[in-house]
Length: 373
Image (cartoon, rainbow, N blue to C red; front, top):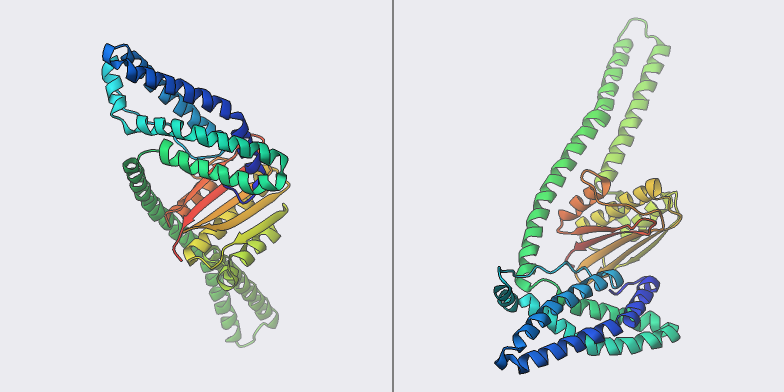
């Protein structure tokens, strides 16, 4: 997978190019021999078991490739779902009519010549470092795209999964909006509203003192000071509430300034990179802001991190937000947790949030937020 931060992705890609070539050559040779021999001897029935073995090995090899691609190139490939039937022969025919089998075979046969080219690039890139920083990530990205096209689910299944995801994101978006409305009501009721009621009552008591025959100057000063303090607290709480809905600096100066302000408040050193050629819609900006803000807060509280990197960039019609820390790892999206809240917020605009956080770190929180400029 192509990465803007080149070093980890570059060396993962080169390792994949160098280490997997022998395996792919063996896979290619075994399948080619079985297919040629099986087809040539089908007329005398000897080829049937050979072709059945070739089908089984195709599945095994393709599943191995999926695991390797997930590990080395971070390609988001799910395990294959294949047609099954009772009985050896019926099951084989079911697999032959399954598009996944043919797409697995196409990948295994097509990528072996490509693997040789990648191997050469890997050797050259290990020697010429500037070439490694430019060519190797691109080759890995292209390989990942090819793998997604052939080893990923068929188009109909992808569309069905997308429709299901969109339906679920709509429901989560409605829930998130309702929860946000309740939070605002609660904060207003318990905070600013109570302060303003207190101000009104205090001013009323002061007014009663003024209307008396002998006003108590000291008591009036105390009441006015109390009302003044409560009024300032109410203004502060309203300001915090408004900032929680949509920060003023974000609306006035955009993401770069807003995220830099968040980074400046973090107790952990934070580097910020924003590479977007034009401002995205307000909903995308605010979601990006809150994703970064919540993630920085979590990293400072729980990760024991010493360095955090924020990377916001445009990829076609999508804004990619990645927050990486070098902490202890172990973060995950838990129901009711802060990261789950971010996922719900992103779902309101059909976005997604994912977390990769192995024990020992690093932790990468990634949001993909679709938008149209």
